[in-house]
Length: 394
Image 1 (tube, one colour):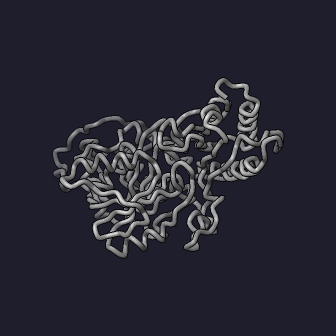
Image 2 (cartoon, one colour; image 1 turned 30 degrees about the vertical axis):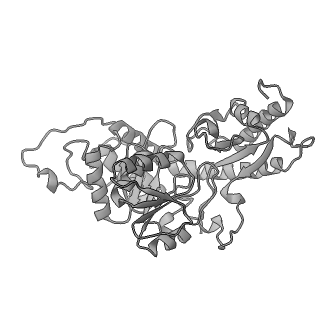
Image 3 (tube, helix red, strand yellow; image 1 turned 180 degrees about the vertical axis):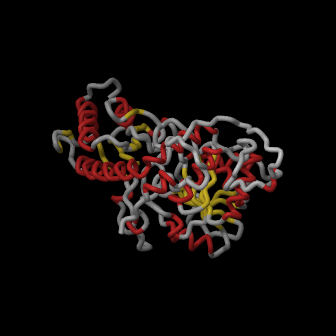
């Protein structure tokens, strides 16, 4: 059975903490401090997961508490929210205190965050590859599907490998939130989401999420966050609370549209120069990357074993020249030339603009909630402009 998010969790999953309020839509609350009660408990006696009163927003605030309760239901764990995805990344490093981090490729921001964390250590944190031999004290960091290609990595394999030496596995599942992928099913110890992307989904907030399995882990993360000062702002928390009400509608539509678009693009990529496919000239697009296109690997892994609720809505393409790749994002009408991903509007980016180490012919595409035929038509006319050489620099 295909996994499915329960809409009632998104709409009513905060019922235990929002009180007997009469408004239907959550109120915007930006207060940082709250009137004291002469009979209230000392700070260290407050239940920060289920607060009956708030003291200071660095500890708890109503909207952020509501967000964490809802996300905990759909992400299958205890959720701590952060000011950004990279703030969540840093928090995971502080929590696990690794001697070495096993990581390969993926989002360049995570690599820079590890560098910043390493500056806080007397002995620099060593970076090793995912397929190097692991040792006690290692942290395995698996991003899957991986940025920018949207290809999948085998969570269970790396979970088994790191657990053999007593280490921990963090899975960055930003590209595949529920119901697409559930990393705990395959051995993850902690799950990270850049909630700026699909969970937020409207290009108007920064947020990060760590998901852990136990309340004791969550309490330590919450305490660390309080004194690192990396909690979400109250307005951003409200924006996220608003956004997740439609999350189950957005992600399923985005996944289905992206998968169908990938199939169309694969046919176009196999069309040679001098021929055309559905009126679009061949020879401009040369390759498409996506989890749905992967074959069974040498260890017997196929992404369908892991991506049980659908494929990621972000993928990458290669064009035949860097000039085409630079021009393409500025030739589309509906796909917006911008960084980031996961939003309701489709985004298209010449990825080397953000990451100079990336292939200069690669373009990343994040599919929004537009209709498939409109996106095909938009990309088709952009490819035609490239082939016809009607743009400066081509």
